Length: 181
Image 1: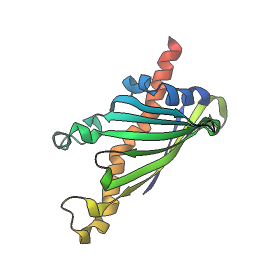
Image 2: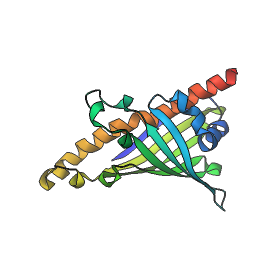
Image 3: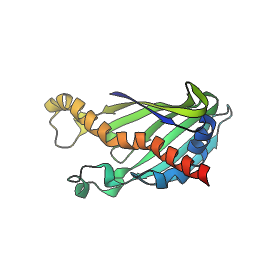
Image 4: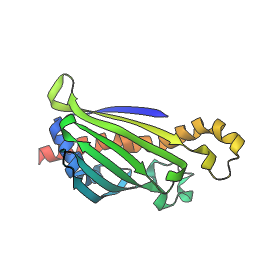
């Protein structure tokens, strides 16, 4: 299932890109569904790109209340492997969780000068693909797996979407506060 989200942050793209690549952990207090972000690996590649592996720890806040007692903390964390191309204002990413054998998720995000506000605002475009392996879900008979796949993909994407869009909101709040200081 392909997905795309777009957001606007009213700060220059160079600033937003720098925060995303180098100081994303400072934005955590402004992201309600994220408990922590920890850099595990950082490698400058010869061609000017930057590879960063981060562990994100989410909270259960985005889950429906009825599900919260049944979802272990470990299931709310993920490893984000990102290859940043600053000259193109983009990052190619994949992430994996403890549940990754059930789905694959990857994409490319763009942190571009916003059309019409090139010097003062950033358009964040999040694009990706979620592929649920419904045939690997426990207790799902194989004859039902293909029929359930679209509903399961929508459910998983609905769980992921708040983290995708709240990154932009967190950046906006963080940069606004920093500007006032």
